[in-house]
Length: 176
Image (cartoon, rainbow, N blue to C red; front, side):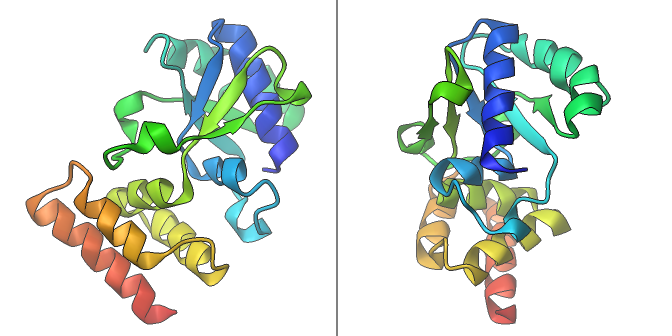
């Protein structure tokens, strides 16, 4: 997915929900901070989004511009409506969101996770595609390991779950 495609999703989600802002928390949130991010960070054809307005907006988004929708079939990319609680994020993440607001987003805007907060969410999830994404952030020098480690400690993870996320970070750094 490229930045104009994310902007299209934001514009469509704003139009569908009536919300003024769409929050992007999946991997494509990288396009907020890095509009011309390297191609290997942009392999996903979906944007995980929600609104602060109502949890019900996730269903509106999925039903209208989600996977398998006419929107998806027409454009080849789609939005996945999620809940705010979908991602494990560190304290202060809302203050670090990157705005995406321009003529392409229509009457609303997007708010994208800051890259280190995104990395925390990916390491907490721990799927192979998530750790691969974080590896690419490091490979392209878009993220700082010490800041991610600090933010992991500021996340709601604790005990064994925190140790697993920290171990994932250590393992992927050792492979670089």
